[in-house]
Length: 285
Image 1 (cartoon, rainbow, N blue to C red):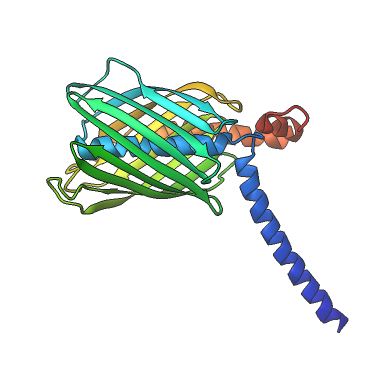
Image 2 (image 1 turned 180 degrees about the vertical axis):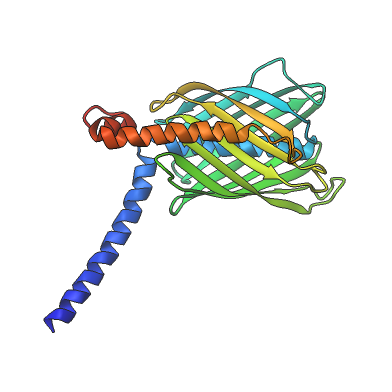
């Protein structure tokens, strides 16, 4: 009888520990720096991909294009912004774009708004990103241009990996019913990102489809001061899907970020107290 009670107690304790570790995993992600650094950064990265997907689907991709941005991230206010540097071209025309996002504590979601222009065409976009569960972010953005309405949706899950942040998920682009190709959804497109101490790289693969006949690889890489946020910068690269013999330089960049993560992991193992203070951004934390 006592053996059965012991087994029951062990099972109950195991269940409590599983729930507790799940809560702590979420809390450690959101509050890793006693602010919301990772959450705000991941949210900003998602809106970058939404803006990039909108450009290549609505205005068609341009081979071997790099767009340069400045950014600002405030993990305490849970807000972010970024803008294209002036004087850049897309499809041979001037391009401008700016995005602002912030957390709505009443609704419990991030809202973001984008305004942009390519040549004479202007567009606007607005949407939400909601963090739920383990954690997963749910993305929904509506883009409006010349009376046409487009949608970009996504579901992306954060996955810790080798001491560095990482998330994977899918994006879907839906055309406008009044557009030339109807309202068929295109996707889902796989997205993957890796980030560590304010450095990141985010990749989305778009296979050939009626809106993007040649397919495209879209990725951003950049940095923002860790852990307190502030001014940063990033680049969004748009490239047609290459032939097998001409791979994109993305792999080498990810390898560099992976090496950085490996060195950071080794440093944590050698100097655990120092690493905890650096990650949390608090002396003696």
